[in-house]
Length: 100
Image (cartoon, rainbow, N blue to C red):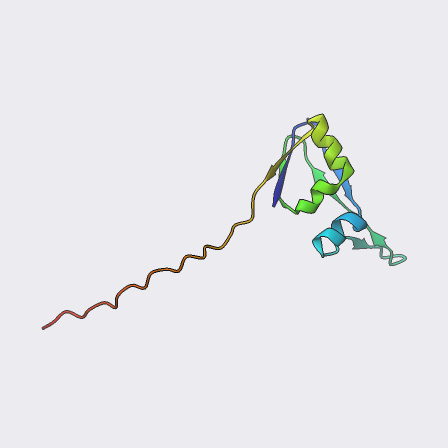
C-alpha cells in the first residue's frame, strides 16, 4: 500500500487512466456516463498539505505522479505487505482440575 502526501499549498488532481490503473489493479475504477454509457476515467484528488492513505502500488506508474515526485510536490510512503508468520504456535497443556 502507498500513502501520498501533498507538500504544496494547492490541491493536486491526477487522472487515473483505465489502461494503467484499472488493468494493473484488476478492478475497474472508472465511472459510467448516464447519457451515452461510455467509460469515464476516475481521478485522485489530494487536498493541499494532506495525505491519502491506502493507494495501490499501480499509482506509482503514472507519469504525472513520477513528475510530481521529482518536483518535490508530493511525497510517497510505501508500506510492505505483511507476511504471515510460518512458525506454529506451541500447544498449551490442558488445564488441570483442582483435586478435592
